[in-house]
Length: 106
Image (tube, rainbow, N blue to C red; front, side, top):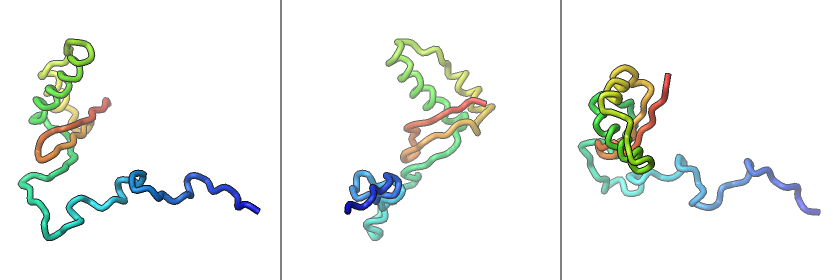
């Protein structure tokens, strides 16, 4: 007699490609004696500050222009928002360079 089907949530993940990212060994952990040293963190998540406004604006401008050909956003608007509501933003930095961000609304 065949066994009853196992619900998807209870099945073991056997493919390394399907393994959740938090279960994978961090890159620097495989060879601890040969870790690369950084003056800045390799990956950092933090709230954006007014000092990040130029990078945020450049990323947004590129996205707007690629879609609509123009950018209605100004650097002053980005500066104002980050100055007033830094807690509504999160930036992802690679070696000190902003590579992605998310901004919410209050």
